[in-house]
Amino acid sequence: MQVAFKQVDVFTSSAFKGNPLAVIMDAQGLSDAQLAAIARWTNLSETTFVLPPQDEAADYRVRIFTVEGELPFAGHPTLGTAHALLEAGWPLKTPGKIVQECGVGLVEVKISHDGALAFAAPAATLTPFSDALMSSALNSEAFDLSQAPTIVDMGIRWLLIPLSSAQAVLDVVPSVADLHRLQQHADVNGTMIFGALPADENEQYEVRALLVENGSLTEDPVTGSANACLARYFAAQGQTRDYRARQGSVIQREGRIQVSFSDAAIWIGGQTVTVIDGTIAV
Image: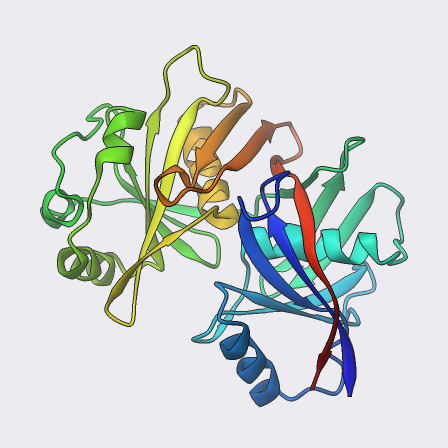
């Protein structure tokens, strides 16, 4: 059976500079075992599978798989899937707005006039966190002591660690063993470090998302969920000025994330480009 398939690059306007995502455009009839096998085969950070919605308010339902299992929510798969479906002419119930159904419920995606997409950051639980392992895990003492490290949980859990500057973020060379122990102590999916950029830059923050998978360090190119957690963290401190973040610099990517605050929602957005458009045999 041939099924429509796209591979897209999210949070970038230039191919090969963002975070890639595989989208299986119609997963009806595929078993959980097949979904998992396809995700392992694509070997990307996430692969999404589009299904008819179960909630009548949604335009579609999506299941999000990593090579290790299923996630209830993730940011760049949300935007990448929406982009792929819009490009394919997917009908929407409300023009200018997409409603995705996933493991955390309904997530709204806003369509901008320039083609950028933004998802509404899900609600989150914030828990301050402290652990002596942070220094050895990051091989750094350049912490921003005016802000507290915090676990932010929005279905996927991130440990946010503020550093003193963008350069301090770029200079981090993690210890894989200690980072793994730290993330086990915090019971999180990954760690995001962040620091402010100089005032003359186009973006305001440099961010990095660090994970340990199968005993090896993985740095995510651009991470929607971690940036959504960071926006929730700032909002909890009363910082609700729109900003832009830069991610992927250390691994030669050019991820750009726009964060916008409104009374109704916090929007995490960016551009997406299609790199592969075809079919997959299943």
